[in-house]
Length: 560
RNA sequence: GCGCCUGUAGCUCAGUGGAUUAGAGCAUCGGCCUCCGGAGCCGAUGGUCGGAGGUUCGAAUCCUCUCAGGCGCGCCA
Image (cartoon, rainbow, N blue to C red; front, side, top):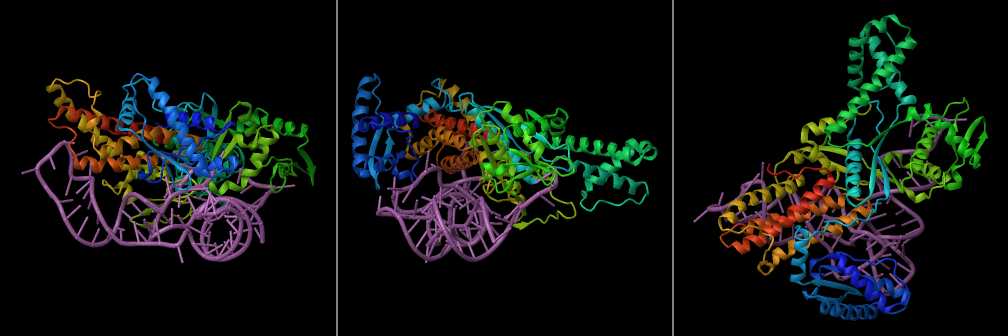
């Protein structure tokens, strides 16, 4: 429905002005009463043409009338497209489609015509999305979970939109945090065997550290006793980090998401890519020495200050492998790189963007999405978590409590850069206050309608319900059909904005129309013609629900 | 001190490169069960879009200042 309007507008605008227009804005009006679709294009043109918007809008409308007159004359079927085209407000053009046109579009949506549900806007462009990348020094927490849900949904969204997407997890398996994990576990091991050993001040303190220590002692007690402390620490560190990474991989699997690539930080060191990347920057004169340290001139690209890459002692900073990592991303030849980070890392953005530019890539080819914190409520009251004691609510606990599907949906219900509150009482509720349930229930309900309808239609000798009679639809049904037909546009906008939460919102809107409708009207009745029409409507809803839920990574249950 | 994010109905939040008469869900109040799943539905109440200026024919949206909350500002990761 958007496609045809866009084409008509493109031609109409071409008629009234010479220069090509880069963008034709088509909006979904705020209020349904305004029309099915609208365009503020006359107002955007007003400045350029130095003419009042209303005059331009009038000209465009006239041009459209001419175009569709020819269009309709040319076509054998002669379906009129617009029911109403009107100038509104200070220059909006509102369009309302005819019932015939909409029903025809509905046939397309439910698969009576060979058309894909959504446009290919990616055109095989390559995008990498890096997300989660939680340090393997502890279990995944809720923030990681939100990043995971977002990254996976974004990947679904973009690959469905025709992009080639790679999902990557960057494993911080080198560096101080891993060492600290090892020492923390080592200290606990000592305590287990009755040896007094100082626990590091900034060590990891969660219960899982004790578990790791116990596991290690069960498996390697003899080595712990016999070998030198230095060697044992190495062993413990390696053991602990592997166990944690395994645990994270299990969390991710049980959350129902997957990665295409696991990039190890250690490997970047081993293959010399860290030193190579700094050499490369040096050749381009972006590196200098000062105070015994090696600096990257990130200020050239707008960073607040230059950043140290090699410390005075000759050790690399955390930033150094990140340079190598982003160089690797660039070398892989993606058209766009998306990093999903916790919002507390926002201060890191300018220096990474600087790296991208120093490597000769445009600043905008790297997009960093920030994910804000998630706080848990129970019955409206916040659940306390004390980070100090190393105790926080893990993703696994929440999945076990409310299920992976519900968790994903709720993580995608808000814009990522807003704080999110999840009330687990609500999340567990099997009622309309639980938005996940409400949406899934609609799908299950439609399914059950179809199950029932199957028998009825066969009994009356009618096979397909695809040849429905659109004249039988009432206003409420037309409203739902319009909503369903907007899906491709919602999808496209969500994909272009890289914002999966728009799908979540849309799904709630569709189901918000369906449930009341269901309450008022029987789909399956003795009137076979009417039944067929209503089934077509249900099928349209079912299709958009399935598609949308698939993007979110949430099951569309046949029954609940 | 500097930087980033947020501030829209009692609560949680939409509002897509200004633009038509500010929206939704929940909560609250009042209704609805002969019927495809009541795990539901209908109706009502409710906002000077944190505040003040400015740009504009027009601002929740852009600019400046300001208030409040969160988060960052290491040769930590």
